[in-house]
Length: 317
Image (cartoon, rainbow, N blue to C red; front, top):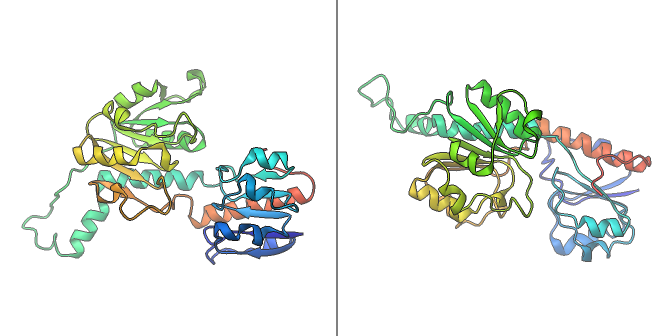
């Protein structure tokens, strides 16, 4: 069985093994694939694995042998699922493989703004502390999380774990969620979106990206937040309007923005967030710990094996 991996470098830059997948068929692994090369590389394939390479209807109808697309991520908007279904092409994803890593990254951003470890590390390599007349110095605000209010948009597996850790830090936790109040654990209070904006010292986004959440953070919603509140986005870039966030950072309405995702990836060099104060941007690495990538590899291989055996799992169509 012909299996093609179109953009394998992101998952496996060389520290993991494709051996388990290779035991299931004749495997070609490409580090990355340009749009114009997709049809040629996949033409003989029955199984294709993709992370960010797009499969629209035009491409799908051009691949008569294709029976299975395995998306190497939780989100699967890179595939026209309706067209795939009509063409009898099965689509699977990788659920809940990076929960712990994304939660860890969320708090890395929060603590980066609260404690400014990187700022002081850089200064002290340049001799700042050594030149201090006192045993201590600080030239930025330092923030204690205990007693602050964490607002969470979306209480899936990631949002729920963020809530639990926030409670461990001594924070009050409010959430905007579709879950009923009676289904929430003790210590998490449900509220409206506007209510969440009003009470949050730190607002973190963990909801899906859809028509109702696209640019849910914009000039209007930011104006309803506490002045100087922190905003965290380790979910999806387009949950925020990046120009509006940059403006709010310049004005001080937002005290900081920590993001692992952007609207365009890779972003343009002139993205306004790169010149905004107190913007902490990581290059979509929340999911990329060794442990999470190994888990992803295992699940992806298991998905393919289950499909070949006629018992597909993690099917999205």
